[in-house]
Amino acid sequence: MSFIITVLLLSISTFFAKEPQSISLNYDKDKGFYTVPVAFGSKGEVFDIQVDTTTSETWIPSPKTSLKIKKYNITQSSTGKKTNKTFEVEDEDGDVRGKACYDNIKVGDLSLDHFGFVLVDEFEYNFKDFAQGKLGLGYKQEHGLDFNFIGKLKQNKLIDKEVFSINAESKELVIGELPTQFKNQLYTTCAVSETNDLDDEYRQAWACELTHIFFNIDKRKKNKKNLDYAFEAHARVTFDSAYPYISIPKRHLKDFKEKFMNEYFNNSYVEKRDGDSTYFVCTDESLVTSSNIAFIMEGYAYIIPYDKLFQKNDDDEYEMLIRFYKENDNIFSFGEPFLNFFTLVYDYEEQEVGFYGGDRIEMTKEWYDYMNEMTPEQQKAKKRRMYIYMGIGLFLLVIIIALAYRNKRENDMNRRFQNDNRIYAA
Image (cartoon, rainbow, N blue to C red):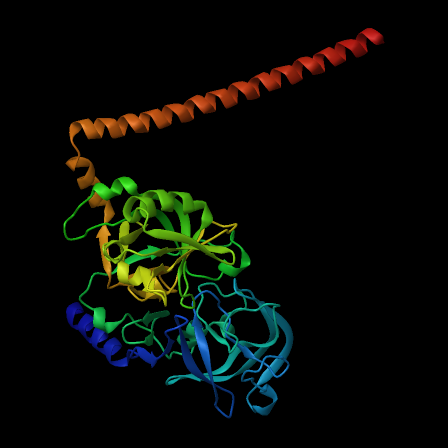
């Protein structure tokens, strides 16, 4: 009887389940990001705005802005409401500031009444971001459910799950369910990392822990000697749908050059600068087409192949789509090269980011196999190096403790001497 009831309940829930919503996106190939048409207000005025997974607020320009772009006059909408609350949306490429507003919006077939967004009056000086507006799909929402696009859809029972994904192949934003075309494929996840301690522009982003970077992993040949050229990152990575590169903090530039550029590209690369960023240009096509980079998150190596890492420029050189920035936080940003190879699923309810498609290796097994494939002499040498490093670290710790103890004793002796002098003088 209980089995029959369970089957009936599942059938009923399936019957009433909401279909996942697939919304066509526009893709700017030159700039490497997606836009989506959104209709605002009672007149359904359409704005083609950027899809951004690093900010939670949706915003569009107001008539007060001086830029020559399309602007939204909320006073002409019978369903619009402007408040006196000023919101600032912070971004690495420029902040915006404006009033909190409420109005009806429509994205694809999804309609929301009284949705909260920012009507931007001011752009930061030297603003370099997309000025026509943004659909905020960040992880953290500071201003409540009315401003949370995915959360508002769930509240209005338009979707069953607070999840979305961006499919680079079909150029679609899928809302409310996992992508159906990857149903039988491997699905891996990483837990969303805390971001409260980061700079303002990163706090609303989806972020995961990044432990290592490996170079030129060959998934087919299982060639593991390249694991010697890995380096530890101990960083966090944000997934930025509005960014055309992969960015790495400059603190890792030395390791990157020694273990990847010098090791695999010899003298066939040139280091260049663009403003406050550093990048590489390579000239030997045979070396470029045999390269890849793997980023390790929660034990999985996510491999980015050469054709996603390099882009041929007008000088017939291969420009690497990685930028090194000097940043206060140890933050990597994964933009187009990563997001166009893996389909990411952003899950508010499970608080995780999922990965479909692409090439990946379960690295705990690979590392175990790698260690076992080494000869006994190689294993001893590796362990000996580890013991040496540990010994050096312990020796330095003992010296620091001894110096601190000696300094404390000298301070204690000086205080006693001063006390004795005061007593003698009295």
